[in-house]
Image (cartoon, rainbow, N blue to C red):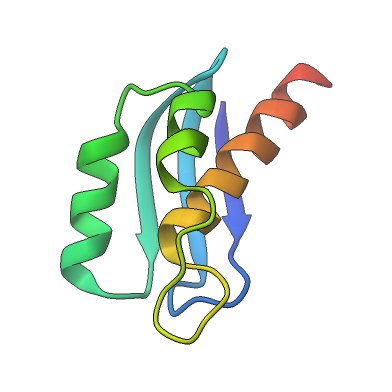
Length: 86
């Protein structure tokens, strides 16, 4: 299932991902720091929602209370819950 998440509190404005069961693939970001937003999808491709949350939840960026990684963890959980309830 393709899922689009509107980010909050980051330079990126949107995350698009595919989720099949609890496995996340094809992550892409709109906006943000180009290098990081190429690296993050490469590192998380094929991981489960729990694995992504364990690695990325709570990471901050500078003075912000969140980061693109933290927002990705939230997006994955939201997509997983949405898929379960569909």
